Image (tube, rainbow, N blue to C red; front, top):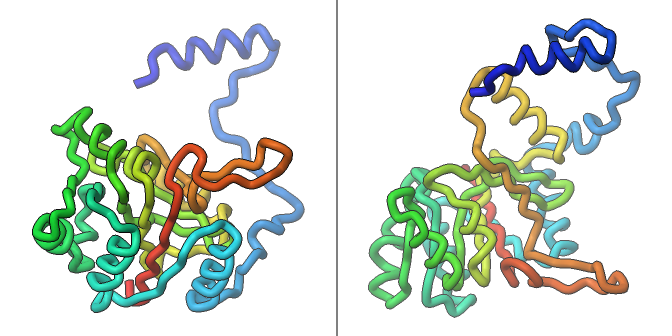
Amino acid sequence: MIENRNEFLSKIAKQLGRPQPTSRPERNFSFGPQHQVLANATQEELVDVLVEQCKNIHTKAITTTTADLVATLQQVVTDYKATSVITSTDQRFADFGVLPLITEHWPQQEIATHQWQERCGQDNITFAERADVGIMVSEMTLAESGTAVLFSDKDKGRSISFLPQNSIILIPKSTIVPRMTQAAATISAMIERGEQVASCVNFITGPSNSADIEMILVVGVHGPIKMTYIIIEDQ
């Protein structure tokens, strides 16, 4: 709740010598080039754009199907030589058929696993700090920049995509949109409808990197060293 908002704004408006606005002003721009980027691309073409962009952001992109997702995810975790994995608590893991892999098969392979849960508190972060791999599911994916959009909440801590050594993001094909324009519009529409918006919206574009020192790119400086996107074609 925001207390005394109207009184506060009225005081500012009075000092400025103008009436307090009671509605949001309409924004009518003469040009909107941001809406034209990839506007006519098919979903298959957006996948191609995303995969190509991944080459520029040091991210491995793999396409698979729901039927093959368990084997694909297992192979990526094996390639990372992971002995510990943290995931969000997300119904989509069950919907995609990978929950038994996470909760049963990996522990049998002596891979420690942890699902982010509110009741675990600081233990979530402690495990994430030591985890070899963090796994989350993208809410929206921006083809133009190769960006996965993650919504944080009590079951999806932002540390999952930030603290582990490596990161895997599952990307349902249906979540792929042209660019930031569509993501911003979607979030704005959620607010207009009065829906609960995530406490933190993360835009993840490949592994962490910096070029602050003489424009020399260094990858893996303050977050995951390696990143893999697994695009699920039939989702």
